[in-house]
Image 1 (spheres, rainbow, N blue to C red):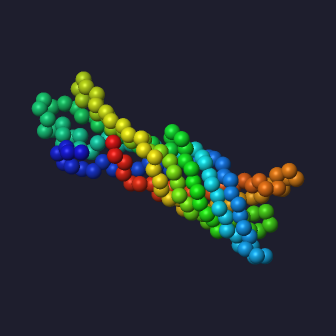
Image 2: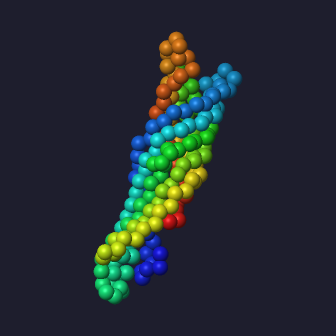
Image 3: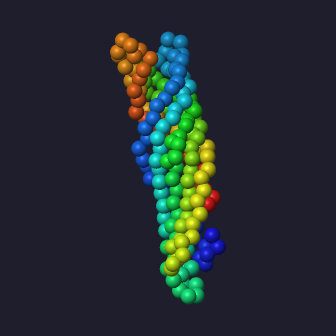
Length: 169
């Protein structure tokens, strides 16, 4: 942006709900309760954020004729196709329960847009890119005790996704 003031337009996406499914395999280390695992995951991720351009006031003051500049920038992560994750985990098993930590690579889409309503004209630009980041997390998993579901479990986990900090529009 080459507006007067040259303030950076930063904003954060908010934490959001993630839902999906996982396929993986765990190896128990000998007769110990420790295990290592490999998994692939696909899920819904709908993080969004946006902000008014901080340079708009300086731009409005220097323009002739003076007018309103309502520039808006926004970002949506994973809204189009969700996310994919390939990772590993280390855990401690107790009977049917598992406590674990997890790390891996995340693949998703990032949509960035910029729009400006200036008097009677509307300007805009948008960009969609596939991006790769990293994931760190921890969770709790429980193996179901049903006869025909011996290899099925349910889990809850916290995942932090580290995505690139900027997108080009």
